[in-house]
Image 1 (cartoon, rainbow, N blue to C red):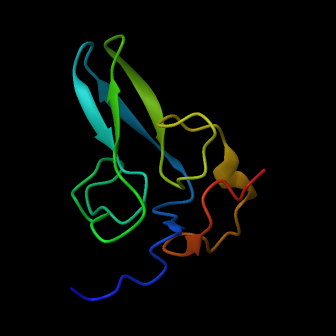
Image 2: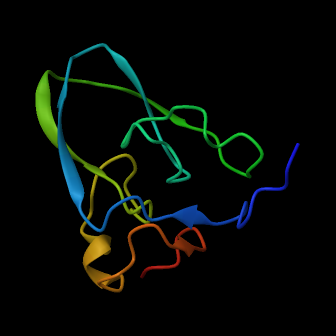
Length: 100
């Protein structure tokens, strides 16, 4: 298996949040690595990295903004930290939790 570049870092999938319709009682698997092509959800692209998807079971049927920069302190939800990343952050690797 080929070595994954920056396997210990998260990729900023987008420098924004994404609104998602969640269904009460349904479990979702939020991408923690930023490599998934099915953002904000996991597609298995974390294989070979230090990351695993985060299981989240919705507590209500509602629309919520999910994090795509992977720097949130409240996963899987956006907390606005993407605003502190450089304008060109999308697609770039960052250490996890590196944005204050």
